[in-house]
Image (cartoon, rainbow, N blue to C red; front, side, top):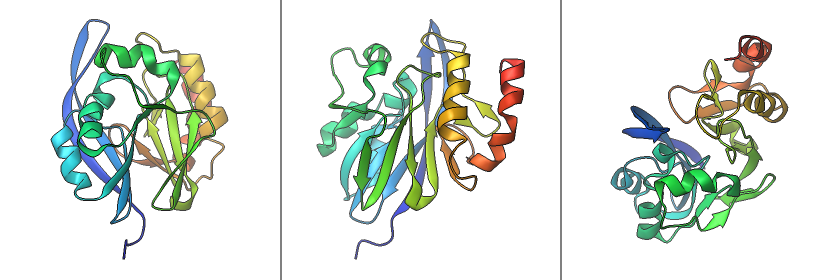
Length: 211
């Protein structure tokens, strides 16, 4: 028996580098599936830790919510060890190349795509702003959204660095995420989970103060 589909969280630690700066960061790696098959969302920092968490289950895909180096650093090694494809929205190729100049992703993500793992559909929502090719993954059967760095508990992702735009991320959140059911649990790229209901009242405040 494969067991019920579930969401597992792994936290890995490393650095994020862009625009000449480097920062220490802890990242959430989300593993979605059952006892037989899983997908990894954001293979961050430590390929050995990701592979250990996957174990002997079949890895169907390494899905990248965006291509900042902290989120994709381990993706090629995880793919090499398992044969799973690395999937990324094409608009983030410019960022991917800064982390992996000699290795391309294996396949594209497009708005409206559905990735099926262990019978669970992960719907791709293109949510640019933090990065041009940023996506979120919505799993209605699990009542879950995997938001990468687009939406956190308490506010939107950062937009103060190259290839990001504040107005765009606010539009993405308002149009694509806050329209989801309020009880949807938001599994973020860093830090704690939240819900759509908890974040929805703050959109106008974020926009007004240029967060």
